[in-house]
Image 1: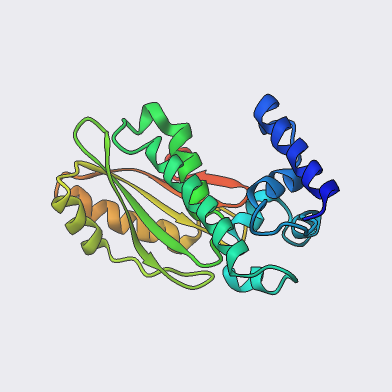
Image 2: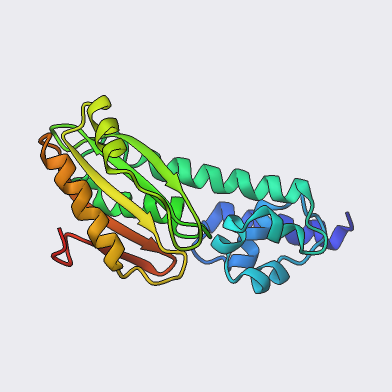
Length: 220
């Protein structure tokens, strides 16, 4: 690696150590992540292609491979960062009461699902003290549909000894507004759960820009 480039990245690292990430633009954060895997490439081009640091990290492998100079080493480094971010966010909510860590729970759901290009349906299981005891993806589907089976969700709740659940799914379209099918499906799950004294505390619809809460909308 040439000396000027080495010096530039050394200065970046020093700025990060002294001042943290807050003042660093996305392309510089990406440089820090890819020091070894992408030694000479300008990361501004990656940000321009995908839109942001988060979008680069979460991009599908197939799309990343289309970018010149991005090979398996770069993709693996990005996916390690993505997995670490999701694991950190998950660690902030599991084993804690859902209501007292609601902001962290939303952050976790956003990190885990917001940028998926296909619909996913996730269930968070709570015990009698509303502590989150389990988190499971029940199904993965297409760009606008993921199959949901109320009986399977209730069965898993019983196996976890859960007294309440929170439903979560994403809308890859970018609009978190619940559809008629979402509403009908939620009511079907709530009815099946109620028969076994399991509460449905909320249903969150996640997308890149934010979320919608069935409870806040008066739909549950």
